[in-house]
Length: 304
Image (cartoon, rainbow, N blue to C red; front, side, top):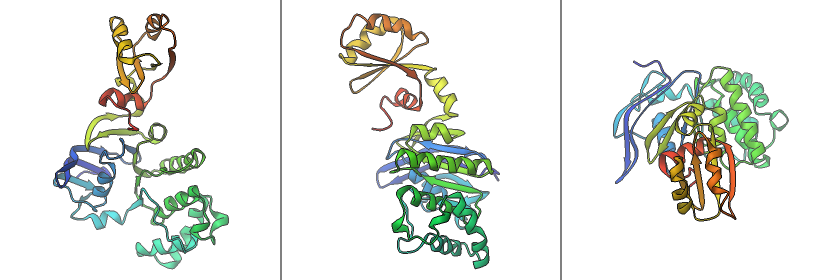
């Protein structure tokens, strides 16, 4: 039996006539942050639910923490912390009471929960909010509490479904800092996200998903280097398809998204020359990123 925290082998899942997970295979290694990257509706949340045994695959095998899922999902869940896409805290209870209640779900004694609470409050930077009701917390504080709550049973594995959705940039960066600290402590994280920066900052390994199908897998920088290179030229203005034809003799790879032309080539300075003859164009050269990878693989931006 696999010793990896999570293995998917040939997994398929449909809801009615809609295939949401299509022959998916991947392996999450211990101590890494493994990201499922894709647009909304790609099947990421369904994959997370199958890891937890909350959705049953139509085909294929899933192993989580050495347990076959969903057959022995309950045993696996006892060692998993879950951060759902939307907070499900008890709004009428205090921060401390939310942690107490959740600890009891895992059969922890009052003494065990009391011993864990101070470090969890410190982790979430909520030491001064222990007696505050959830309704008094900001969005970032609620998200920090949800993550702290997922740690009450000192889990081996954390399953996080879009953990920073709806947060402002400052709150998002604070959450990333908390998650990086968990990785330094040896936790394993399965992270679903559609944020490029989040994936690049946190993930050791990425599985890029579209329509429930894996279209690429590797490290963030490895994917960027393999699919794109180092730099990208964005061209705004004019007619992108005409500009694409103009640049064809120079040999760049190009993609059109809306009114923007994206150019990928080893010598982007050479590509600039024919563009100089066209007035009204705005040309931006920037480092390649995961958005470019998705656009290159699918012909559309991940935010679509």
